[in-house]
Amino acid sequence: MNNFQTNLTQLKSGMVALVGVPSDENSSFLRGPAQAPGQIRRVLHSGSDNLCAENGHDLGREPRLLDVGDLPLGPGTWQADGAPIITQHIANLLDREARVLSLGGDHAVTFPIVQAFAAKYPDLTILHIDAHSDLYEEFEGSRVSHACPFARIMEAGLAKQLVQVGIRTLNAHQKAQAEKFGVEIIHMTDWQPGMALNLAGPLYLSLDLDGLDPAFAPGVSHHEPGGLTTREVIDLIQAIDVPLVGADIVELNPVRDLVGMTTAVAAKLLKEIAAKML
Ligand code: MN
Ligand code: MN
Image (cartoon, rainbow, N blue to C red; front, top):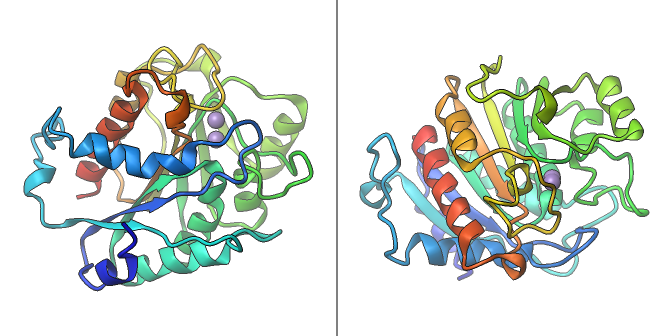
């Protein structure tokens, strides 16, 4: 699996790099998301579905989509202020003028990934789909918890605009954080299917699968009923009309999945995101 450095040499300008970030040590409740990249690849190549996105773009015949494998992450990956090795690896992909689609991993991986994106794209807008705003100043003593990445991103000024969709767990602390950082939150109570989002480019999409209702995506660590349908998330992706330079799909927990349902959702969304990037 870990031919990462070798595969990197095949990555050329204009390609989409699919990369696994198998890290779940910053999850607060359950482990499991580190197994997600391998499981999503398994479903993607199982033959149960073809590799065609809904716009007709056949990713099975697309030489510009390159799976570079999983990042080689050791025990020393995480430090108090981030994961510089993840940032460095993603920066290497971006230096080759590729767009990068990362498979988490828990949501902690988004901070070091976005550090690399912000260095390349100073005017980055982030669209964040999640049940949770992940804006905690710190969570259970950790500043790199999967509950904190968007606090780290915003305090470091890594995004010009952060738009959150699917939120349905905002407490007083996170509400104050959102106001402090100027986060635009579209709460589930205000959500309407087909809602137009005012997004600028270049755009980074961070997709936490618990933003979907657990009826559609049960294989996540935190079940939060009352979420988005699979169709609504697909429609959101297809409606993006600015350059989508990067994305992550995080928080798939295969240990909690039912008959591979959530893994199939992740594979489906991967196809739609990759087709949009290309
Ligand atoms: Mn999250
Ligand atoms: Mn979440």
